[in-house]
Length: 197
Image (cartoon, rainbow, N blue to C red; front, side, top):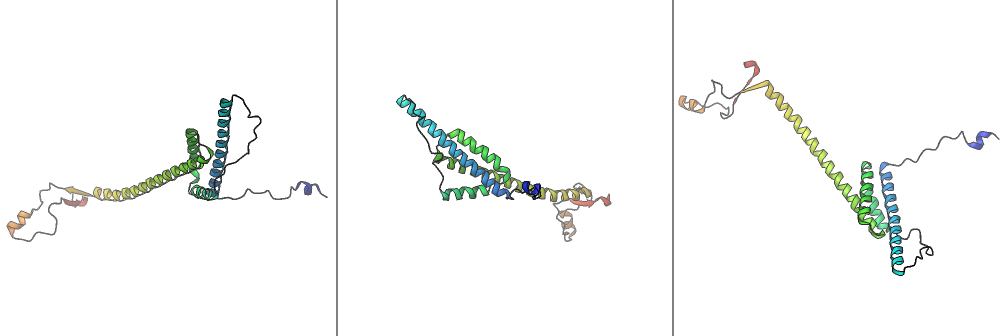
């Protein structure tokens, strides 16, 4: 028996599982939610112990054994939250976690309230994404309009406007002569190309 078979050096290296960015965002955010629920339970137990200690004057915390994780969100709520997480762009995953932690620190919720704060952080991120998408859309529209206005600018640079030219005809001259006015609008200035000068 060869040594290579013992160490399996001839096997190809295992690849990491190929997951889409959306799956990774969902997994990351849901792990953060689970961790924050556990922390909220821990904080709640500590507050209850402090209350008992103050009320009775005796510390029995060394006698009490707690379940590791007693509260869990319902499957329906989990599916709704996962659906919201799937709408989050990967670049917003970090800001969602930061916002969620800020809400937790601000409100110090009990375990059942954590999922509501998580939903709030997700909705904030989705609104921000929508606002930024609308801003990009407006910027694209602005750039498109700006390009068309540039074409008008190049037109203006090729022609000159002469509002005070001496040979401008007026409607009164045509009426005095008894001729039909030409089709040109008289209130507009006369445009001449640069070749005329």
